[in-house]
Length: 339
Image 1: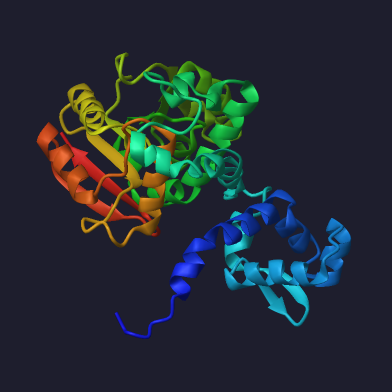
Image 2: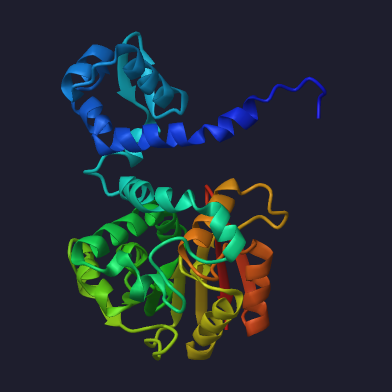
């Protein structure tokens, strides 16, 4: 380290919550939609439209979004960037704001108890000993909560599932099963990019969201929901299984149990697809994966983002051969193993 290196990185990290809140407020008030509808707004127009009174504060709020490449500024006029246009407009299927909403109203509060989580190893939410988030937690407690949680999971999956659907030849399979399908984001993308039958498998409470979301698809007649618990029930027959944002929720032994169950259920030459936020083997480069591990610590009991190497080893130890790695642009990795 240079002897006279300034401490700005430390201060910026310590104040990172300010940028987070700026993004979440902008999304919550639908600032990006207003800017897009008007093809650009000045600071004064934004103040008038949203009843903001503090001129300097509004300018700094907007310029902070510019600094993070979520708005651009030409003179005094603010417009969307490619990033915000693609991901922060609620009327688009690529919208990720539902995850921001879950983060703001659920994870942000529990993050203040990170020290307690480190000291006890217990989730810092409504769960008590022996309970699980999906069967006992508030995320599925009411239809509204369930819909909000499923929308958040769809937001988190919007980019990787599109990439996976485009990059994999799904038509090589007759029947694919998306395990832990939630709203059916991956299942829908697979069906729309191929001619195979796709099953979404999840707890019974997930069915209404799956049915409503997949009914909008041109491939709806090839999409089907099967209710069950992938630890307790037999898996639907398929020649390919997919875990998307599922295995990271579970402990090492539970990860192995689920992967083993897919191997045992597959026919010869069947395949398992795993896409997750996986840590680089040195655990230093995928910062988003480390963030997600902190969230997992706060929300779940035993779950964690594993390294790519450990997932590859897991698939091979269970019996999968020719395990292939594909790095999805961003923070995620796709692994494919064959029986």
